[in-house]
Amino acid sequence: MTKQRLDVRSAAEVLGISVDAISMRARRGTLDSEHDDGRLYVWVNADETTDETTVRDELVEELRDRIGYLEEESRRKDHLLAAALERTPAIEAPVSPEPAESPETPAEGTDKGKGPPETERRSWWQRWFGR
Image 1 (cartoon, helix red, strand yellow):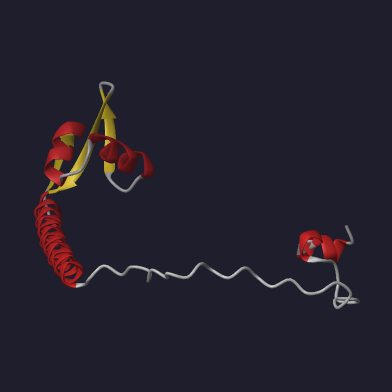
Image 2 (tube, helix red, strand yellow):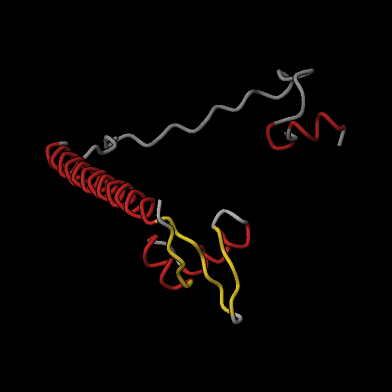
């Protein structure tokens, strides 16, 4: 295996990651690094860079294919939904010629022991906590 000593910018280009990512990897110790004249240099295995970039490129291509497939599926489903909505007639409430009946009110004296009248109904939490 041949290792190359590269500055941070060159290493970022070779590995296909950002300069900050190179610095963080060097700080964590996942990349061999050294400081010389106030500059950071990293040791990069030449064999690994080609493998890593190839794998990364393959993954990017697969993700692009998946995104394209999902976009096409979304367009297809939008088209099917629009076609179904065009064929479906609008549903409207039936028009009734008769006026709606008013609710019946019970005669006085028939609701003894059944609780408060409708106008004085309390919510469940008021009944539960006794308010």
